[in-house]
Image 1 (cartoon, rainbow, N blue to C red):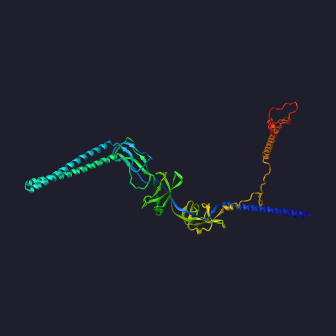
Image 2 (image 1 turned 90 degrees about the horizontal axis):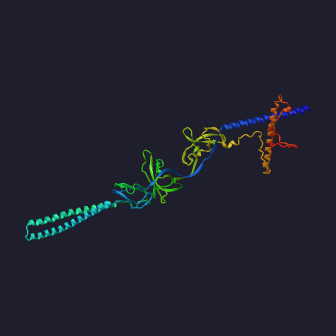
Image 3 (image 1 turned 120 degrees about the horizontal axis):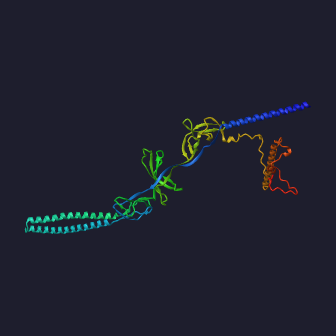
Length: 486
């Protein structure tokens, strides 16, 4: 009977030993497999997606006034009045400034006086011509009657012709003097410096942009007085490259944004396209007209222009970071879930929209595309996918094959937690005090060969910490020192 029990115990022991060895081997193998998996590069994948978007290009340009010119003085003199200042709205024909016109008034009066003299001369000549003509006609009649000689008739004819010639000279002098009067009158009008521009010109409100002179300043002819700027209609100037140059057409709609109004956009349209590209920059100038009826935009602002060329729908795209270069070719890494490896596949790329790029040969991408870790993998490399990491995590020690025990919800009264914590702290403090007292007792016992057991003492401070104070005996005054609570 004893031998049978012994054999049975040996058999059970052998089975237990084999079971333990199997568990150890299985655990080590699983850990080794997980370690090998962790040594692989971890990747993540994405799928192809379709997008609908507008094909547009953005350009940086500058706004400037559609029309701008300087108002110059046509005569010299001293400025006696300025009627407009910077920022004032100016109408067509408005008088910007006035020059002292005293001298020009006198010159005009002088010219008028000379004109009157020339008119008198012409009138006198006209009377002389009439008289000479009548004298010539009378002498002609007398000659026919042979009352006067031929020489007398010729003299009368000469006087008549001479008066006509001098009359023509006087008329020319009169015309010259009339011109002098007009010139002096024009110079007098130039003392009123006006802002004039052609009638019917496009645009709207014009303002005085700059003022170059002050009252009292003496200026010369052709001196700039002020500059007038058209701000009701602005122009934006951008430069485009040769690739998109053929896409620009007159009348295309353009959206414009400025830093002064970041949440708003303004409409414009292409007005002019340069017929050539600059040889140095290989770019062409494009002018965009922008209506500024509310006059919030100002010349000189930076303009971010967006030009919409067309709209595309159903475009197959991938994130740009998926595109890698291998052997001088663009491509992507595809992930084979069965083999747990990646391989390189060449692709043809097209347009770029935001952070995505068009894939022209999307039909060749029949597997997920690597978008995380693609910079570290190589062709036909074994990898680890993100989705498999959680599946291959090893179980915690001592929990192999066991389900985690759910934590029980505490039903204790919330008010009892602070009291229990205080009791635990007090008990811990008492244990620490006792341990300190034991340490002191051991140190004092090491000096036992010098002191008798009755002579061994304990530090009062330690004793007061280690042992709570006792109740005072009858007739004995209690100590005034406070002991430390255990």
